[in-house]
Structures are given as structure tokens and as C-alpha cells.
Image 1 (cartoon, rainbow, N blue to C red):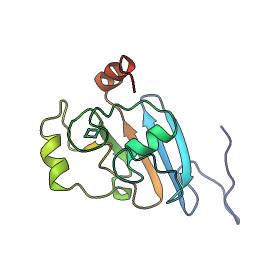
Image 2 (image 1 turned 180 degrees about the horizontal axis):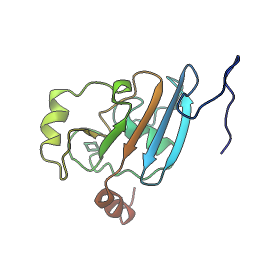
Image 3 (image 1 turned 90 degrees about the vertical axis):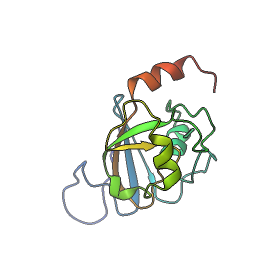
Length: 138
Ligand code: FES
């Protein structure tokens, strides 16, 4: 994978994406993508720069049965790192998540959790979600 060298001196670490960069790692695949904050093409899946929209921009599989309208739980993901880069959860999302399987403290809906500032985010897509998706036409 190509690594971009930051401007100026200093050793680059994988932990620190550049100034205005968003870096998202999707587990368990371990695929990491990087883009400039606010510059990603909006695919209209959920909120702008939502994790669902990010995933679909990069052809990553994340189910979205309701089309990103906070009306299902198929885009359920767990945020492992970088929750501070995401939009706060609103009541609709919290209510919807109550119905999700494998609910954890770090659960979010991929279509509702939008990246609101640059940084590093790591999310995990539950295995049952991925299996379900592979049979879906999307
Ligand atoms: S796609 Fe249905 S709630 Fe996110």
C-alpha cells in the first residue's frame, strides 16, 4: 500500500494521518482507506461522509437494507477507534440500535455515524452482517 509522506520533518507513523486526512480501517478485512476530509464524493447513502457512504465509495460491503434512512439495523458496526471523529448519536439512531443484534457500547449505525473531523477511525463490521450481505443484491 502506498504511504504518503507528511510535509515537513518527522517520522511518519501509521497512527497519524496527515492534517486534513481521514483514515478508516474496516475490520475484520483490515482494509484501510484514506481521503481528504470533506472531499469524498457523496453517494447519498445515509448522512454525508457517513461510514456507510465511505464504505460504498470504496466498494466495501456493508449492508444497508433501508438505504441509509435509520430504519433498519443492517448497517450496524462497532467503532473500535476514533469515536471522537464521528457525529454524536441522535435519539433516532439510539432507538433504532436498541433493536440491533450484538449491541455493544461502541455500536453505531453506519449510515448515521458521519465523519465530522479528520483523524483515524477503526470500525468492525459484524460477521453476520457480512454473510447476509454476500447474498444480497445491492
Ligand atoms: S442502512 Fe438502515 S439504518 Fe443504516
